[in-house]
Image 1 (tube, rainbow, N blue to C red):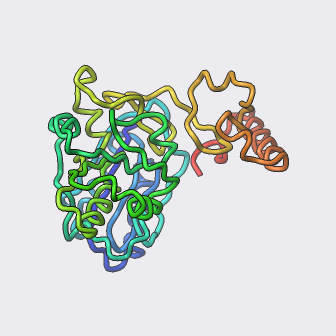
Image 2 (image 1 turned 120 degrees about the vertical axis):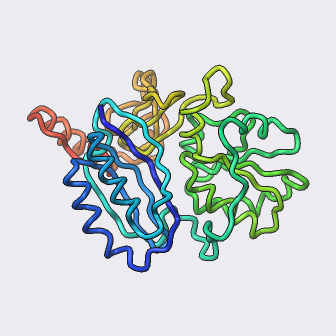
Length: 303
């Protein structure tokens, strides 16, 4: 059993590149894999490994400047959910493309999971899912609005086109772990919205704490690791990834005529050319050969 830790923290790093080597060394020493993103605005990522190795890495991160209050959402995985360790330098730890957004200045009102149901059932509240379309497709809160965005960068343009729909409404926003809402609520406040709320700890915290019988969550929650999805109690969900389009699919989707392992699924069969599919078949052949040798081909795991 592997410990999975999802984390983010907004804090000013004067020189993020100077932190990279020590983070890599600490994670490697603890046999931790996954991805950490470093930027001048802070740190974001999900990692997994033995419990003691993850604990050591989290202690290292909390010792970084301004990170002593780092909050971490823990879960477990039966198989290692990441093949490799990556510590990447970025302009933003979650990319919104709005240079004036600063979650350290102000954000929306945090709403604890226990108080979320009552808020989103209020008739004057509009509930907005800030995640990407393929994430929303496998699960969301009842009554939530799906912006249909392909990336978080698209959210500001969507809001500009749709803000007239939310006159005299309070806005409640949510995302997987909370980080996108830190930026989106700050941005909405800068656009003149008065009452903006967001789910503290995101969907993951809600699914961890809210009893399924009392839940307003419908479906599963997409996660960016080898588990693909989780449900209530953060139990591993039924989804797998189509390695052609990287979208989540269910076990029964593999029986559909459009499905070919590593090549296509019903969601992407019409989106790729025969040349693309030939290339995907060769990649899948290499993955199968590696598996037959008892090896793990990286192309068949995380990017």
